[in-house]
Image (cartoon, rainbow, N blue to C red; front, side):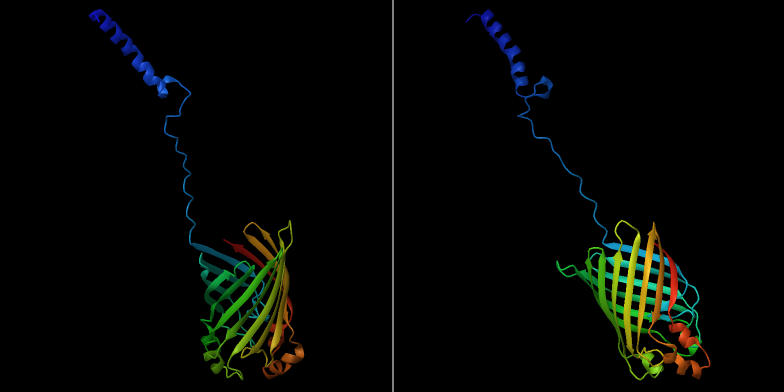
Length: 285
């Protein structure tokens, strides 16, 4: 082959080589064939981790403070507040406080501070939620007010289940033998409280109906009687505010408290146990 022919063949190969390289799927070629390109990576950003702790709380103005049907504020208005730290495991720790006013029948020293903690969890797929813990009632001013520290504690437990818009709950509090019963020389050195509750959220409204029925028996008897207490009411939620109006009282009659009222020349024992309307406004966060 002559030199001229070799140069001509080399020139042809030099022109064809780049063209062949572009057919191989090089993006610069404008070819729609991307079969030889690595697949594009499509990644989803990881979800933000859920915080293990939840903090909730609230404050309320209440027309009077009733505990298990009995007035703790001499039927006068009070302010109350609560704060809870809950863990995703089901454990929680809470505090609750209220102002108070005393009279001859009930005098807790002007302030109540409660501290309690427990565990709540759903029982499998049953729809039943169990809640249990330890509850402490602290009355910093009681010793000054009545000469005795009225603070005490209870063990509590409950079961709750929701049926559509209705929630049913039943539970109990148990106060074992402790200084309170010795200080007041109660005939029974323990006390039990059992209760049941029903509540219903009215569909397509901000209204909730609620009811409560409880029984006190033991060292916390009132005017030497075990007794029932009840609450029937309705709440309306608007943004962070809840407005509530409830009928609260006991089954203790004027005759049941007459001996104590006569002994202390007062009507406070009857007044603290009679049925009243209780209104409240609560702000939650």
